[in-house]
Amino acid sequence: MNSDWIRCATVLGAGTMGAGIAGELARIGLEVRLYDADATALPRGLAQLAAGQSALVEAGLLSPGEAVAAQSRVQSVECLEAACDGVDLVIEAVTENMAVKEPLLTAVDRLSPAAALIASNTSGLSITRLAAATGRPAQVAGMHFWNPAHLMPLVEVTEGQNTAPATADALLDLARRLGKRPIRVCHDIPGFVGNRLQFAVVREALHLLASGVASAADIDTAMTAGPGLRYGLLGPLATADLAGLDVFLAISQYLFSDLSNASLPPALLADMVAAGDLGAKSGRGFYPYQDDERQRRLARRDRVLLGFLTVLQRETDR
Ligand SMILES: NC(=O)c1ccc[n+]([C@@H]2O[C@H](COP(=O)([O-])OP(=O)(O)OC[C@H]3O[C@@H](n4cnc5c(N)ncnc54)[C@H](O)[C@@H]3O)[C@@H](O)[C@H]2O)c1
Image 1: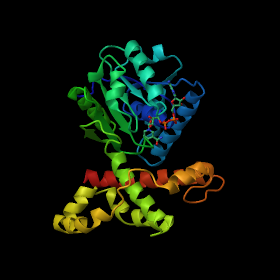
Image 2: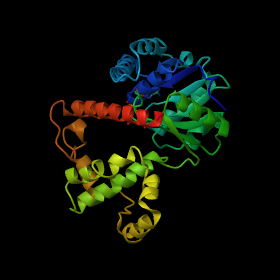
Image 3: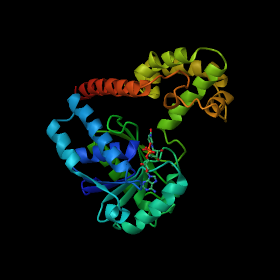
Image 4: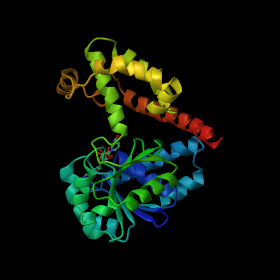
């Protein structure tokens, strides 16, 4: 199923993800409603959306006129009834808590048109369970945008046990229209695909740090200057193909049994959290952060991502 019939969408939750997703949908011409239970979140979300689009304009990926037009298509709404009335698609991006999402989706099911699709941006909660909170599980799927939603190309469309293939097809098509690089996740498993890959790396990085094999900075450099630099272009399986599967088999035979297979996070991480060392937001994590360093690092991340996206776009156009 294509997604041309999706003309009006509601995004629930105007936080980090909801604001970015709303901006993306408006960018391709959808009428978008942005709803949040906390009215003070709405102006913040609109400001974040505008800032994200300004960055796209500065990078030459969006014209100033397109940004103005996109932002005029986003309406903030304080009432759930009005948010759901007559929409074709609802994307839920509220707090990652089943106890918050389930009752909200039950209400959305009651208030939105029978034909509307419902997608959840959950990072890993069960899509099957979220869908069961509605009376239309065939029309519910995961639609997991990555952060920041206006820059990251990956969108994971996850089918719950009762999701109709046509629902996933429509969401995949919509993501392609957004210029994203969506993937279909055929089984509703924790972490989908992207976070499973990411956390496999995090588990090994924590194991290396806790074992004293290398410092935090050196472990990070091993990724950013090594495999991580390639991964933007070549995934792990394409990398194996280019290196030679015989080589990867030989390395896997002696290395797999030595990799961390811990089923719980290491004490190192739990101890840091217990001590209030939460990373950049608390001023200390694996590194110290002073003053506005978190903001500066986020700005640099977005700048480099934009440059990288521009290069990748050129490569794809060739
Ligand atoms: N932040 C990330 O990096 C990231 C990445 C991908 C996916 N996600 C997922 O996206 C979702 C949102 O995450 P976020 O980081 O944007 O969170 P956030 O805390 O920035 O925003 C959540 C918003 O939801 C609102 N909200 C809470 N309960 C609500 C309700 N019942 N009705 C309407 N609004 C409600 C809050 O007021 C808040 O504004 C989560 O499921 C999260 O796991 C987050």
